[in-house]
Every structure is written in C-alpha cells, then in structure tokens.
Image (cartoon, rainbow, N blue to C red; front, side, top):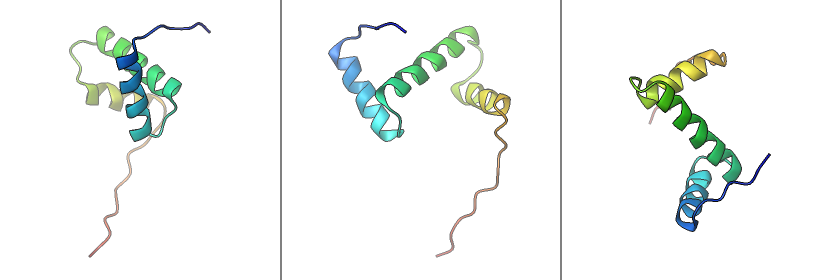
Length: 70
C-alpha cells in the first residue's frame, strides 16, 4: 500500500462525502477511484448502469421497497 498525495480541497470534499455515505475517508477515496476507472473503461455507460452491473456481479438482488403508510 502506498501513500497518495492530494490537495487539501479534494481531501475536504472526500471527508464530507464519506460522512454522507457512511464510509471512512479511505473507503470513500477507494470507491471514487474504482468508479472513475470503471467510467474510463466503459465510456458509453452511465454511472447507474455501471453501479447496477457491479451490484449484479456481486450477487446483490433487487428487492421491493416497502413504504410505510401514513
């Protein structure tokens, strides 16, 4: 494992995003790197198409969402 140097502004954005997505800063960075690589390797696919493909590949099956009645 190596050290990656990024500027302070990007680090701040990663920290904020990691809070929202309930990931560590390292996990958020790894996620963005992986998504970026997949986008570059599949320029005709949208983010949603890539995410769906990766989730299916990992064996995640869609389930119906139950909405609470009011």
